[in-house]
Length: 167
Image (cartoon, rainbow, N blue to C red; front, side):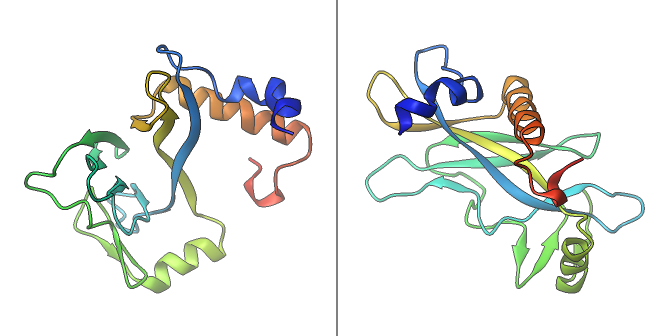
């Protein structure tokens, strides 16, 4: 089956410069900060671990707030120093903004989902390295975002996007 769909899907999973293969784009659901002076997108994350297995090098991502109220995710390999990737942005249904001190209540988070005001944020890319066939992770690039838009447009043109996700 994979061989039948590979030619169509290959453009959405381009090869890496080292010959490795993208196998997944990792996403977070998001809501918007309700602070009128902020309005930033808040990823709903229980933790920031990408890989945390015993005997393996841990991998997590660091969320870096930008001046334009966006977030960049930096993939980090190794033991965390001075930060705790087990801490995310959510607890008991609330959401903590990374740009300001605002914390949305669980009712505010639910209201945004009910009103379909939620969003999605691409956080990292999982790939299989050609050299050792192991899974690794890297930060998202503009090429990844453009590839996603191409895939989304292709699905929309084919009528395969759910109505609530169409722009």
